[in-house]
Image 1 (cartoon, helix red, strand yellow):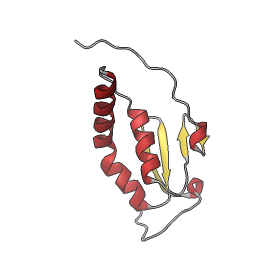
Image 2 (image 1 turned 90 degrees about the vertical axis):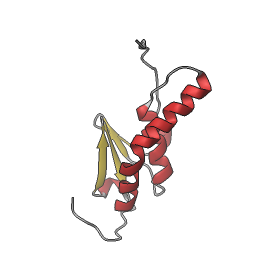
Image 3 (image 1 turned 30 degrees about the vertical axis):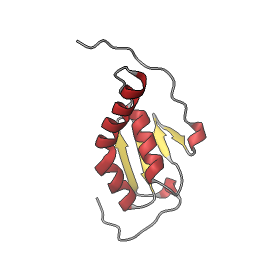
Image 4 (image 1 turned 120 degrees about the vertical axis):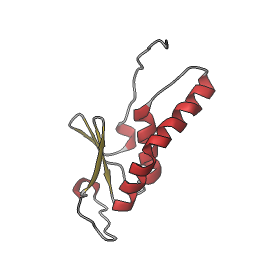
Length: 105
């Protein structure tokens, strides 16, 4: 990846700082924001899972929810993700619907 020194891209759709997890591409305004997300997303998934499990007394793993939450905590210059080729530009467009039940062995 090309190194950008202190460059800010307020228009997230034009930013070169894109990180893709599963089917979601997260766009960042700075390289620092992207790096912070990359450094913290795994631990954040664990933390969110533990918090939901403690609250509801079921084992809950919602990686997408955890990733969206972390993204909104880090990226303070807007919201721009691409999910299954659909561009989502603001948080109000996101709707998480449904869970899949699996049994623990």
